[in-house]
Length: 288
Image 1 (cartoon, one colour):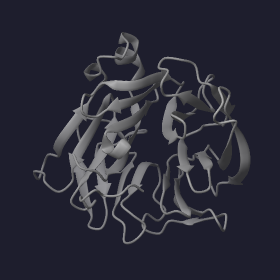
Image 2 (spheres, rainbow, N blue to C red):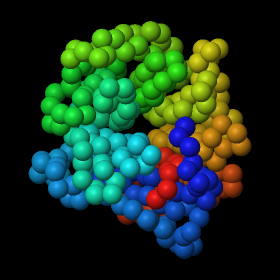
Image 3 (cartoon, rainbow, N blue to C red):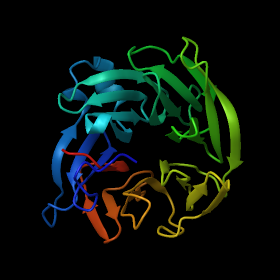
């Protein structure tokens, strides 16, 4: 997890996405009935996005991951849009399309992996060069109901979450024009509906499924219930402030697949966002 740059998660912010918006919310400095939104983005803000992307491909944004010390934000949408936003200018530095895109992860050599979920042209992990917007992926591999991605730079493995499996891939021929992924190992989930996949520590991942939240130990290769959230169902997105006495932010589906609330633990709190169909939330551990 990236360093906090002088702002502790307790006193800091979360970034959240849903509908056609991405927002940065101060979780401490807020009015009783309304969140303190300190930055916001929607497709019309990005002058470099083609009109089709602005009007169609970012209608249901479902991922928002900050990178580059918080200067950029990677996003995906279930309506197909994939982009990297330059936070200061609100323009995009990269954009492309993946059917039912659900998550994105930064990889070495200016590349990203994108998880495409249920769709005739989805159910995949797609690899893109981020210096070539609007292009087809340079590589694509099938993964049914792909929903989550985490790159482990120490193990040099890309972990990917499907409907009922967690898989780890090696990067092959990565510094050529024809990179590919090679399956290293896979594990069956304890239940189905794999949804969010996030880092917990250097040795552990968190996995949300339809009925539970699990912690996966990479060394022991085993899943156990993540006790702080117990058997909570339909957690669409969660984020952990750190492995020791963590503060958790999560979105739990209330209306079909979305919610109007961000829940926080340690201490307990709830932020109401009535104007968005919220999907994912991530701690913002950077300066604003």
